[in-house]
Amino acid sequence: MAASWRRVSAAGARADQHAPVHLETSDVEIRQAANPLAVGVERLQQIFADSADDSELMMGVFDADGVLLWRGGTQRWLDVADTLELVEGSRWDEQSTATTAVSLVMTEHRSIRVFGTEHYNHALQSLYCAAAPVHDPRTGVLTGIVGLAGPATAVQPSSTAFATSLAALGEHEIAAAHARSLAELRRSAGASLTGIRGPALLVDRDGWVADSRGCSSPAAVAAPSEDVPQFVPGIGSCIAQPVGTGWLLRRVGPANPIVASLDLRGEPSLTVEGDGDEWRTVLTRRHAQILLLLAEAGDSGLTSARLSRLIFGDTGHTVTVRAEMSRLRRAVGALITSRPYRLAPGVTLHVATDQPDQGAVIDRAPADAAPAPPGTPHVGKHRRRGSPAHTHP
Image (cartoon, rainbow, N blue to C red; front, side):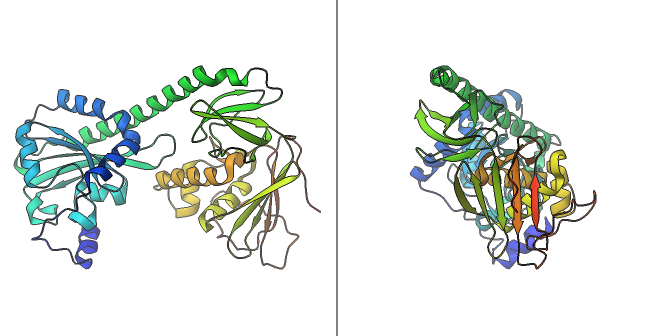
């Protein structure tokens, strides 16, 4: 709370001025349609209406930017909310409305309640508000925030728990809708796998696997592009063709070996070779660091909690780790598997740095060792046990 007050004060916010930024109606509609919570918002509103016995309580569903997309409550309280500009399209991040429960959830990623004078803006100090984050269960990324607001004189001790329960329901609705969409893709396009010789995957537009033939499939691969080859460890070089609302990925070359080369000489990059072809992608330093940690972990892999401790020094950043892993897996395809996170079977990782000991092999880090940042003198190769893999001389 104090840190938020310092930030907004340093940014020049005025406590006597409440003027939320408002988005255009067309922008709000685009955000509503694109947000994963769109599939469950009616359910959230219904549960709120059925469960709340307080006539002076409002629910708001915000996106990850703090924009109010949907709301619910009695007409009396919605009229009060109108006077506070707590309406669809209003923005409730620190830059727009200073310290609120919504803005704190955006920075802290946990359930929070703000009471009365804890609000920075005087106009909001007659309220209490509770908010909880909604993470996309597929990626761990913050996708929305459920907030409750009411008069400070009638604060409900259970408001934070109520907000947290509604957020959990939102996550459940996202997961259920995704499961239904994959089932529908299997029903409508599953026949496209029939008759294919060799392994193949049926995936949705984002790369989530709906069905497979002839292979042990990952949960997801990088989002395909038509006629652009991509590597899927355990399958090989694949080509994508659109089928229904998804993609059919089928092998166009041998499955193994796959050799990934992580180059830390300058901007980190990853080159993947296999099936007589290669592709290259630029990585962030954080993603390069994670690849090194996974390689050092070997077959045992690393949980999100362990990665959080290695990267940040504690286990309190698992949500951030899951989001980073989601982004990394989209960048490198299925070179990484999950539960726990590790290099896929048959993948060999070579590392190059500016250090002189170019022939050294990366040693596994001790159980409680802190991670070395990308660019340290770790050079060599790593291989997940499984299918045979190339080694470079």
